[in-house]
Image 1 (cartoon, helix red, strand yellow):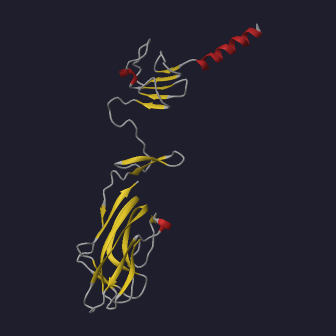
Image 2 (image 1 turned 90 degrees about the vertical axis):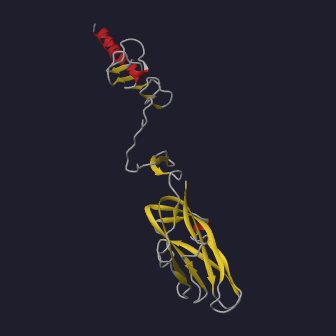
Image 3 (image 1 turned 45 degrees about the vertical axis):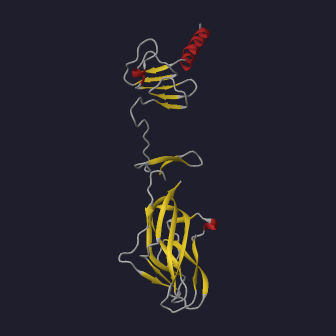
Length: 262
């Protein structure tokens, strides 16, 4: 009798492990089946309406929400109602998309498809900047404020060259997080060699009176990644000796704008 008792107890303990467990239903359709509204029939499979409040885990490890027959590792059937998934982790926001990192961890991020182009801000009233002979750069008075993400920043500057001696020079403009010197705080340059200047042009003067300007043009595009929620980027011009060049912020040809990219 003692041997028979242990054999019988073993069968009772093992059998549930290979059965189906139902919560709110006496007719489970999967290894684990929760009928939230307890509206499934006692026999046969529930219809689509009854499945809408069900959750199942199948014998293959698939999870179904709103369906008892998931086709993938996780399937959510919300019928025709929008918003089947909600993830709140502090990065959520309007028009953001879920982006994975290298390990498959997802966060909500702004997409270039939903972010508009940003125009630079020019001083009002307009201002004229002359090369000063001291320091490495002069602030053009122009800036742009960008949010976190990658941007193509494009600039064009009309430069009047004032030098009375016939000469040619290569002139640069720079993106900076400060107006007094070239810095990159809050954004990273993604160009060749992480260069902070893709804006350049050959400025030429044919010689003549000091009041006569020969107009030249600096242009180019730089790819940057803003690493803070928001950063203001300033446009600086390489400094030359006093009286070499002049920049007017209200020249018709000037432009400064940024386009978001992924």
